[in-house]
Length: 335
Ligand code: KG4
Ligand code: ZN
Image 1 (tube, protein in one colour):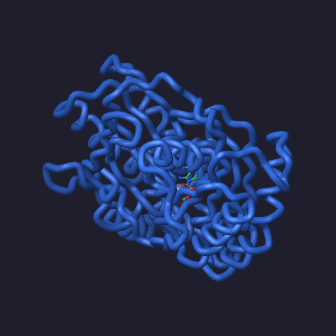
Image 2: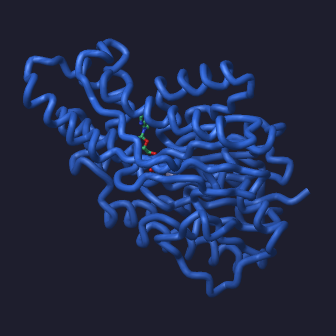
């Protein structure tokens, strides 16, 4: 058995996990600095970096203790760490910590792509996925549609040409005067609103698999200026329906054009109730399974980094100790 300690610090969450190569999670600890960012309406990179520096040691220690390991000399085989993409200051804290642990314990370490980590999240809860699998990876920083031919074998079919889906949620929420992060707030309000109250466009960028959200955000601003009496719940429901519709149309198109045996969701927006309902309905209609990770597996965590790290370690071996952080590291560079 190979046992990994993984560290994730690409954005505002400081996370550590212990996972074995059967993808059994022995411990997964997450400490968020979101409360410090809320007043600013978004993640402030310098605050996030400072918070990681304070939190990383205690979070790693807790993960090792929860896994029943000696924190001074743990019986792990490899240290996995997110080395990109993400906020440079945040990545550097996690990467430096991982190198220090690896040196102190005389263990190998492996740098992991954060997006590949998200793609491994469904595997941690559903070990018997069917391939090829189409995965909608939608978060605050990324939105892409990926055809996975097997673990770590991905083909990026399309991505957003402007805002990420979560970013659009956060911007519209801000416009509506809702707190950050806006996704969960809009989702909650949408449950009581009328999705047909505001007519919004469903952007379709050409015949490929790319999508776009900035026009939708502008349309929400225009509509609320024109119809100031519309309730926030009705705007939230209409916006949520338009986002889900765009993503589901692209998924439908992939199912029409490619050989696909399953549909998965990953990333923070995978927690969205309209999207989850829509994917489940689409999967039933097409007779393929849907894999919807639990909410804690959708958002940033270190267990998914451990899973991707174990895969990369087995495939490519350890990373060199002079590995640098890559704030812009496209998933396509791995395939
Ligand atoms: O994956 P994640 O935790 O962080 C990264 O961006 O990597 O995703 C956070 C994003 C935020 O934009 C947040 O507003 C969005 O996911 N989000 C949601 C929901 N829960 C979180 N968006 C829509 N509906 C939700 N229920
Ligand atoms: Zn993420």
